Image (cartoon, rainbow, N blue to C red; front, side, top):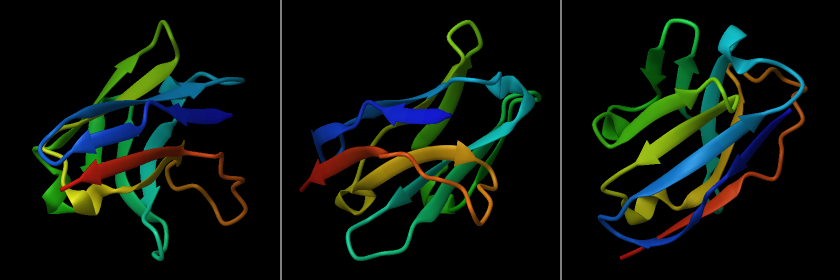
Amino acid sequence: QLQASGGGLVQAGGSLRLSCAASGFTFDEYTIGWFRQAPGREREGVLCFGSGDGSTYYASDSMKGRFTIASDNTKNTIYLQMNDLKPEDTAIYYCAPCPPGANYEWGQGTQVTVSS
C-alpha cells in the first residue's frame, strides 16, 4: 500500500514536499510514480521513479527542473519536492506503482492548492 501526504496551500512560486510511504513491501524493488488529478480533468502522470537505479522519467518537460524526487530507504518513503509551483499544479496528488495497472485501487491522495 502506498499513501501520499504533505499537501497544502501555497502561493505561486512556493514549494512543497510530498511524501509517499510504502507499507507491506519494499519500494526499492519497484518503480513508483506520482500522479495528479486536477478539478474536472483526468488523472495524469507526473513522473516515475525507479528507486533501484535512481532513474526518473518525467511525464512533461514543464516539470523538469521544478519537480525532483528523493528516497529514504530507512523509512521506506519517497519524496516529491516541488518548487516554483504554479496555479496549474493545483490537483490531488497520488503515488502508485508505475504503471499503476487498470484495476489499481487508488488511495485518497493529498491536495495541493497553488494560489496566484
